[in-house]
Image 1: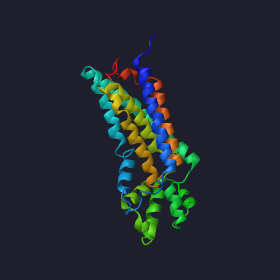
Image 2: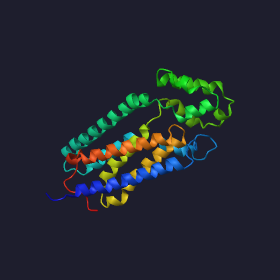
Image 3: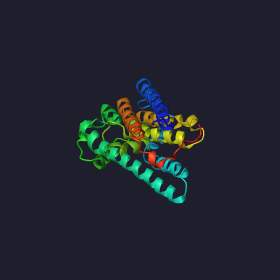
Image 4: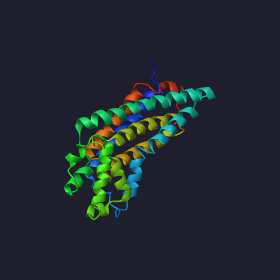
Length: 263
């Protein structure tokens, strides 16, 4: 059986996955990123938060829809576009939901690693991390954290904290390991890179763009103080591996044209 273009496409994307992961992990572990973007007087605080939120909240939905639109646009006929778009969107959504639920309700509680900001607040004498995480759910911890900030308005750290970062910390009160944002970002990067290379003219020139975004999401999580280098390294690794497995399993075969665009 002759080799088709798809395995070559896989190898090309896989090379980008490896390079992006190594670069992201290298920067995460060597650069002075922890808490480099949490104070109001740090010029990049809002940028890091914007990048961080693009890996969840408002970012995942548009990226998912963009990938679906890319798949649907290359089909022939309205019916094929609708059916294959739904097939792609539904399949990817199920994968994301399964990993998100497993990470949030199984892996993170099992490891029970505290958020870096919780350890920092403990070091500043604002509360005990063990007391914080002894609360039964994220909502209770959010209320506890909000009350702590309100009761210590004159504390130097509370005064210096960027208001938007404070709101982010108050929402991110789950456990830390591994980073779900990093997992999602690298998984999406693999999927988007493959679709870009397969479906866009000269797509190989732009395969690096999703990985640049994914690496930025990972690093932003460290900068705003909600994850450690270990959290984002493992999250990125898991996301990259899951994305590569999806490609190797041929789960996109039925929603792609028979031949790739000319590269």
